[in-house]
Length: 190
Image (cartoon, rainbow, N blue to C red):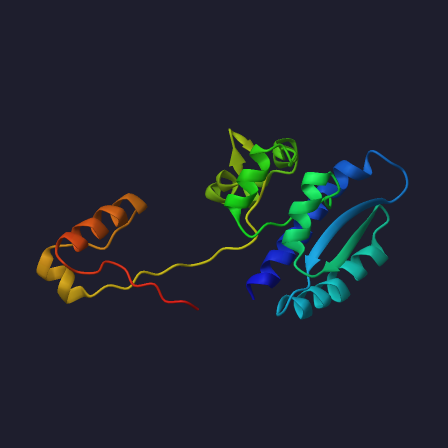
């Protein structure tokens, strides 16, 4: 499901760039996109190609999305970025990867598009802030995940602890829990 949302968001981003690109040429503009066709992602990528990209390409008078299914597209993308041959739309495993690539100069800022198309009306503020590097917007999150923290109310009440509401509170609480001789977090692999 996560991959589906990531791919849909990438396609939306591609569509948002169409007016800017199509104004530069009278022929159809081609936008390249690499989809990860590794393991469980293969069926999702093919479905995306068959049901979104192909119908879009068939109906668009201005743009062609050249989507390629690649095994391990992230490694391929990183190699292509350093060699200057990456796709027009780059997907990353997460915002920290986008941050590093923007800092290295591999991404173009999206601020003009964001203002022109009113992204601040469509995206919640933290989503736009997450993609900023040195005050400029370089990426958009492609998914939203909910993280939950379970706690033992009886133990919290006995120690006078409150559930944290911020990351700073969580870090301090973990230190307090550890100081009380309790293991503060258990990590469970999915």
